Length: 290
Image (cartoon, rainbow, N blue to C red):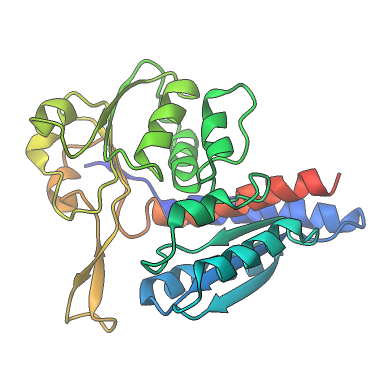
């Protein structure tokens, strides 16, 4: 049976480490790092995620500002708020919670965020720096995956890593990070990939980041593989108080007996995304507070 990669524990460890660094800053007479969060509309999942980020800020000693806007806000008005965040010297980093309403361009908004404050790591400059010798603020979820691999001492060098899902948020940047930092051989699969199982069965490290429950079955996984499930989908479940449960891409109960390591959903990669956001905010603040 696989060793469970406990994202909640690693995330908690990281928060303790960050809090120690924040305390050290304060002891030197510096202010605490400051994260701002912009959320538009009333999407329940988004408000849950934002609540988790605020809770994390409190745990590590960050200041935070939450700005909530109606779904009807115009793109131009939202961009003005983004500009104000870019120029506010008391804000070290900020995020615009996705998804945004259909009338607002996600690309236009994320690209208007200053790369120095882009703690989600979405901006082109930060994305492009993955392949440089001087990486900037890294995309949060891939950074979280890399941190899990490091802290569980999972070797990546020379390994066959297969990533299912080539999104700009997870799959594409993670492929670059595993190749550049991890010295791995990476195969990046997308929705056009033919005979997906022929690729996944070659993986020493298999990452699925699609958001399609049940996509990865046991017949697609090599015995002894490390399985990282980034997919998180709300599935209707009347037995839960919330009315839904979170489901990953991997059929966990079937795949876990085959794998050497596996991340659960929830409790695997999810908490690491927030931990990475805290890491990036601290890094941005440290540059500002020199």
